[in-house]
Image (cartoon, rainbow, N blue to C red; front, side):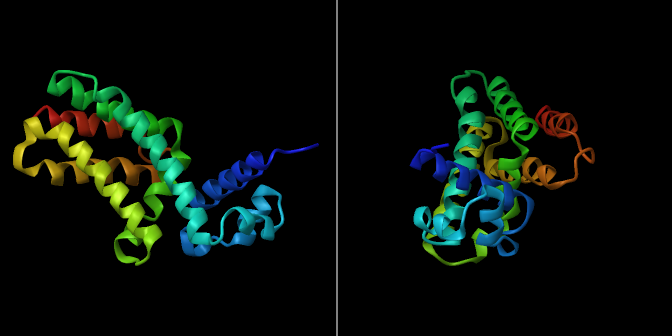
Length: 183
């Protein structure tokens, strides 16, 4: 069986997403990823020169999927309530349908605020931009605290992805947030 070069990179990236969504960055080794991908460790280094570069690539992919899901619909809506509900429902849908990507994003959120290095700065900048976009959608009704509210919303949805399945359903998360918007 012949696998295209691009296919091997994707297999490695998928294995990295799986590993980083189930364990913290520090607890994942390149050997772990090689085992999941069923490849030799040097092959990983051919595509990704370091663990941090591999994490960045896996995080970027998961994060762009989140952004596409959350903002793809809501930016086209007109009324505030409709826009906010659409954004939140899209975010909750992402939680329901791609928990692995959301876990990968959320598991290391505290790390990129404390670590130094270009990969972590890039990730922090992207995440802060995401929160600011959520704040922009919510700002027409929430006014001065929209950034704080957006951070709380992203923290609630994100942290619920880290809970064991069944502890807090996406429906419960959605209900809590939507009800708080209605105040």
